[in-house]
Image 1 (cartoon, rainbow, N blue to C red):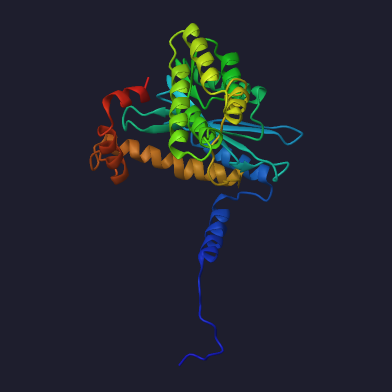
Image 2: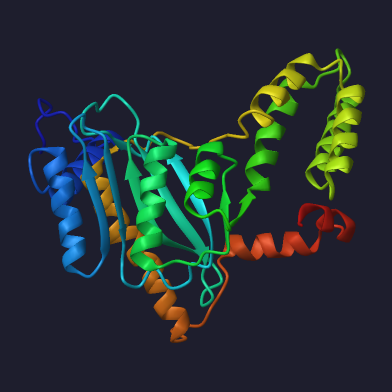
Length: 315
């Protein structure tokens, strides 16, 4: 018989999360100081054959990058993916750090494959220039095309290092930014139907500019866009400021600020390893290549899209 003086044992989400965090801390922590712990992780990767870049300046600013032996084999075409709030800087944990990943499409799995990780506390042109120069010199890269998330900083740094590379802007990021501001700034008072018509018109105008084949066609589409939508001052103000001058939008989801050593641990021991194992399985036909349930749903939905609409969604 259980005494009534004992309260029932209840385990909630936070109890489990705290246990997991303690476990991850023990796995990733190599030293008391963040900088020393991160350096030990990078040195361990180097011993396993990875190419590394590790620089920490007197003011605490840092550049950390690594490429495992298996990663840099399909880097003629790639994309730079930038993640904000990925880590806590050494000198000021209250600020945000950045994770930049070079992602390519694997010829084996036909899926995205990360081939290089870069962690820094300053996503500025000089910092990206050092990283890209290190990549170019270390691997003798001859990159043909690279896609960015519409970042002028990434664009400028790439152009400084390799002026003969074709730089592509990610239409998905641009359109996602547009969609958010269309919903916010394009409205017809007391008329849902008219609002929808206006939103569709704005999308059509924007698509006309995006898919213009000549500068003259773009200028004409731009003038038409301004003339037909002059009543939507909020959206026009966003467009002129964010699209023409910055072309920069980040979508991060929940905050992911981690200590740099834990980020290095997760990327090298979990993320990259998972991609590598998938590649080996497909290359050796272990279990065959099958779509997940979600991928199969997306595949079926894609075939249901009208042909003309589908053509307008791709280049």
